[in-house]
Amino acid sequence: MSTRNTRVLAPVVPSWGRLRPLGIDQVRIDGGFWGERQRLNASAIIPHALRWEERVGWIDNFAHVRAGDIAGHHGGRQFADSDVYKLIEAMAWEVGRTGDVALDEQIERLGRLLAAAQCDDGYLNTQFGNPGQAPRYSDFAWGHELYCFGHLIQAGVARLRTGRGGSVAEVALRAADHVCREFADGARPDVCGHPEIEVALAELSRVTGEPRYLDQANRFLARRGHGLLPDGEFGRGYFLDDVPFVDSPVLHGHAVRALYLCAGAVDIAVERGDAQLLDAARGQYDAALAARTYLTGGMGAHHQDEAFGADFELPPDRAYCETCAGVASVMVAWRLLLATGQPRYADVIERTLFNLVAACPSAGGDGFFYTNTLHRRTPAAASAPDEVAPRADALLRAPWFEVSCCPTNVARTFASLATFIATGSDAGIQVHQYAPATIVTPKARLRMQTAYPDDGLVRISVDEAPGPFALDLRIPQWAGGATVDGQSVPVGTLRTRVQAGDVVELVFPMIPRVIVPDDRIDAVRGAVAVERGPLVLCLESVDLPEGVEVNDVAVAAPPGARMDGDTVTMPGLIRRTCPTAWPYGVGPAGRATQPCDLVMRPYHAWGNRGPATMRVWLPVG
Image (tube, rainbow, N blue to C red; front, side):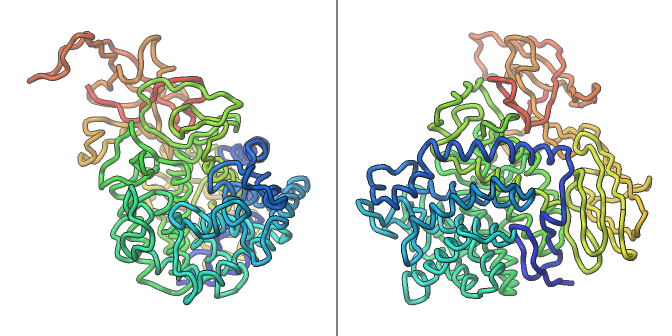
């Protein structure tokens, strides 16, 4: 049964869906793993990003546009504006979450800067269309103008949803109106090389009630796949302009582009009641989950074009797994969860948030992974704390990149994390993610207490409720053997009837699990990985004897893992090979082995103890 959604303080609020999102005023994370990430975001990540965007000139670009001298002073790449907008969006959700007055003033300061640089017709860009620069819309493949507008609009949506409005929202609305005039039927028939405007316009239509924004989003989606963009170095598939969206069987091309477009397609399908489009988006995403996704939830196997590979082409040591692709995958999964109510999409969100998005920032919030490899063969050098990293994959977490889309994407995700915890429906409340939290809806006031993911015990107390209601609990696919109030339950969704005063106790099995890959994934055939609860574990060389790297060890057969206190350990072997040996022959290569214990730690925390080699998939024997 579908349900009509009303005003909610959240980034995604479909008009219709199986489930209703809850806003940051209805769900509060009270501590634990995700509470610590929100604290880190507010105290370190957002201020860090603001300092760097000022230092490298991305914010000053707008002042130079206003002054008329941007041609000689532009800082950053052609899409630098978008990261200013994503930072503003992160700040907006943080203000909505905490009411931080000083941060709100910062947003308005930035909003006034944007307003001063905006043209009378709503156009705003610091790379194009200003004196001494290339004309507007002269490079749809690489210019990113509509992409930047998309992130500006999402920042405006955040201000509107949190009831602040102000200059950022006004600038975003003028920009959206400009886009609708410029790209309506009978005007420019173009599309942007990087999807993003589609998902932004769809959400703006929801928050304003203006159908023309949704109509324009649909126009952009319908135009894509008809060869409007050039057939460049990576082909039109890189831009998702090779086939119409509904005709593609699986996500392909540039991973972030494909996922942003898929998220926009779900939004458009839901708002227009287009079952065929929704099925196409869902089918593509499901196919990518089945054959083009890493154990961590990461997507994107190619470095040269940041793209998906073929089915089961998932090399761990060449995994790209851009952090932004992880954020975008969560965006798609969340929209599909709201539309369909299927808990497996909440499983995907859990896996991706814990093992990829959480891996991006350093423990101090001042360094970031752009790519997320599953195997580091040589120790990566530490990044200089005051230098911009030129390459996304060359170092340990870097303080800033020439392309710093990932830090700001993580910031806006962490600021709005509470919206992923639970949903509502006419029947009751659905809990999708487990964290210490307070949930308040017209149905009830719930209090969730847990040390998850370190511990599998979750207690949900119904503190207030006007009457009995249905409480749905997600039992993750990995949690076979879970119990609710002492009774074994199957994976999937468990519905229980509760009322004020009730306490529901979930216990998830947290014993380590040895994971075997599909044998079609050639790159890890014969290897194993380890998970505990929702966490993927890895081996770091800092936990091995001196002089031993992760490529020097194997898991003893048969593979097994055990808990040693708070640590997961696997019996392993150090393999010593003669440096002059030939590594090919008709039988096993001759080598000496030495028993050792392999200490496995959460993948999301790797790289915080200095340069190291690291491995998720370990060979056996």
